[in-house]
Amino acid sequence: MEMLFIELKKGSSMPLYEQIYEQIRQDIINGKLHVGMKLPSKRKLGDFLNISQTTIEYAYGQLTAEGFISAVPRKGFYVQAIEELAYIQPIDQLPKPLPQKPTTITIDFSPGDVDTDFFPFSKWRKYAKEVIDESSKDLLLLGDPHGDIELRKEIAQYLYHSRGVICTHEQVVVGSGTEQLMPLLIRILGTDAIYAIEDPGYPLTHHVFTHNNRDVVPVNVDEEGMNVQALQKSAATVAYVTPSHQFPTGTVLSAARRTALLNWASTKETRFIIEDDFDSEFRYTGRPIPALQGMDKGNNVIYLSTFSKSLMPSLRIAYTVLPKVLLSRYRNTFTHYASTVPRLDQHILARFMEDGHFSRHLNKMRTIYRRKRHILIEALLPYAPIVSFSGEESGMHMIMSVKTNDTEEQLVAQALKGGIRIYGLNKYRTTPVKGVPSFLIGFGGLSVESISTGIEVLMATWNIKKDSES
Image 1: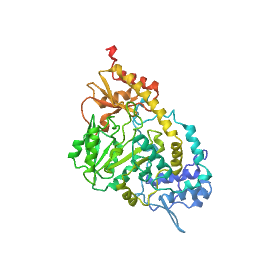
Image 2: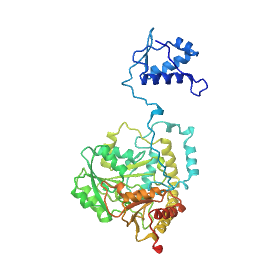
Image 3: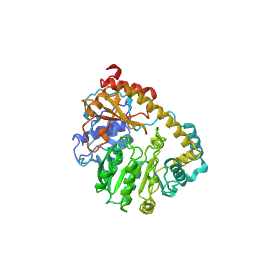
Image 4: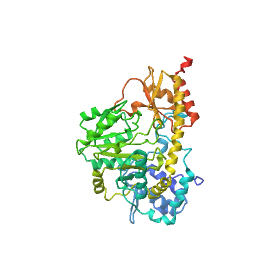
């Protein structure tokens, strides 16, 4: 064939072989070099371009590896058909996004953020240094598939004293997050299980059921929690609930409904309750709400919780407490599974808990979050009666409702333009409802100063004045 015309820029930061490779590749993609065409030999092309054969060899080798050309022994290199190759569009031909003015978020009322300013780094570092040592080389190997016994014992003891959960460490299974443990629970509950979910509820967990092709029945939540009467009328066999602090409304499952829910589960062997106790540590008024599992006499409650809110979301350690009737089923199903949580992390946490630092950290954070909650309430009160709130007894967010002619979506958009991110309650419903717009207002990750400022800016964005200014 005729010699290839390749323009080399020897002063460029791109190596010469890459320049050759890129130009030949583009010529093949654009059809300038046809299928079956023979390329110049490495020696001829090197002489023509006044560069070494090694440079040509690198370029041809890359083109061969990607399937643009093929090498035929004793004959040379030939252009390959690229119809079946993934089309690589040149960067300069990619469609350019429409210019948009970026929105600067100054305050994010996320319900999932935690305060990172008061984490006990020095204590955590101490245990990390102790664990990450040559004397702990056995921790580099796989451990118990349910999680190392040291951590499971600490979890079982903590749950008994703080949540009233009655279990042995054998019933505790450690995993890397609720979303990792949930599919395992779904497996052992069988393909015939039908799941009742709270509406509104936690969308990430709800998606786990649909992603695993399980039937789901939404059950309405009111001021007493899940409507157990509606649950009893449904075909559900497993109820997923957040009884101590319903997400996202913040309501507590009433005593009458707790009893009704446990009675519902006890009437059939196939019925179970998944109790997600995601942030029960943070209750600010009255006594802590005891876990449903501790009231269970029929071995029907699967307890589920995490260290994401109490310590840090990035730790990725959650746990479930299995009823004894499901324990053997779990072991048989996941015989060959290994724990998804690194053993080093498990032992750091176990020692942190054993020496009482976890409890002390919770007490400190409970005081900090209580103050932030108070600041948020104080910031909202002057805007009553247009603005009201609920669910402030526990957790790190509350529900704020606004009497206005605007829709929930419109208010979210207006807030965003003002640099405030809020979360509409309809995002957590299976079917959006019309009515008074309501929002999740998180305070856990915000400073005390930004909470008051954020509410003032938000209300100004909505043109809502304080009651004294009306």
